[in-house]
Amino acid sequence: MGAQDGEQLSRELQAQVVAFVRAFGLHRPDETPCGAPVPVSEAHAVAVLAEQGPLSQLELGRHLGLTKSTVSRLVDQLENRGWASRQVGADDGRRRLVDLTTEGRKAAGEIAGLRAERMARVLDRIPEKDLWIFQAPVPVPSRRIVSPALDRCPIPSVTGCSA
Image (cartoon, rainbow, N blue to C red; front, side):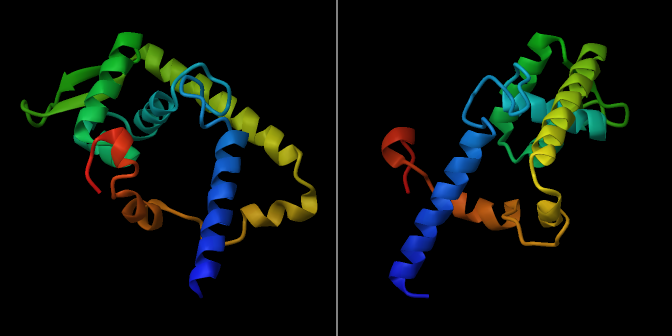
């Protein structure tokens, strides 16, 4: 592939990713794509905790792909909402586990319900003949592919990091 082809492909990928982000509302910081009035990071955290059960902050960070300090702030936010609590690990008193409270489990269920409803509406709009695309084993950008490309400093002038 030539340099111009690579540049064109890059522009097309950028346009498709931006269109996807906007179409699903991922650019709205305080609302999930399914319309729950919750930041996406909090919605993902309660979904992981509902599925996995109590996790250390390190484990939660691994599931979410977030840094230790970001997870700490995220758990603080969940605690402030009354959705999570930090507990001492039963097997190791030095280990702190994050678990959902009753309210957190209720919120996780409500968000999951909204997500299921939204996805059902999306699928209803897709012609039946095109539904195969969601079942085909097509390569989809995953953390393995995308993360290394994002490891570099994205915008040094804005973030203050060095490239």
